[in-house]
Length: 111
Length: 110
Image (tube, rainbow over all chains, first blue to last red; front, side, top):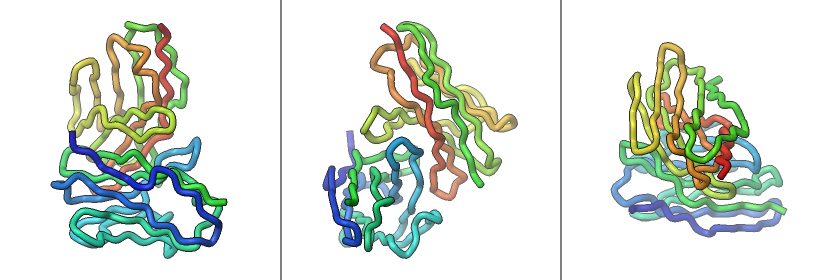
């Protein structure tokens, strides 16, 4: 079964530092997404990406965040100047037309 | 404000029983609906998708959609202890951005 791969599984960073979360979507999927889930809360949409550009973003996805597809397989989420409230599980997902497949997530802890 | 509402539970059912999970959504523009299962500390796992009114069955799972009532449900037949998890309902308006409910915690008692 094809899967979405995320690295690292766990990231601890100091407040104010930049982090890059990495994802390898399913190879024949064309849409890519980032979601986050703060502990005990809902899964929240951050951004969708298609054809090398952002197609939709939420109000959470402000100038602190950016996404990139640096090559044919990776999809990254960069968080600049991290804050304590950025601590969450970050899920990458991809879709090929019938539902969204989520990666196993990166647990980001900002200290 | 797009909202997807679910009863947080826990919903407790005995092993072998039918578990019924419900969800309502506020955005009438929603076109696609999904049920995900999430174990504690894990990522959402797709169980069912449904796009048109009526029922859709897949094994022990049946999803039901009523767009007039803005209501989605998931039935789990012959519930097993391994079905114990949080079930997330999600809606997509076609803009490729899922809105999730807060989830219903299901406990299947052996």
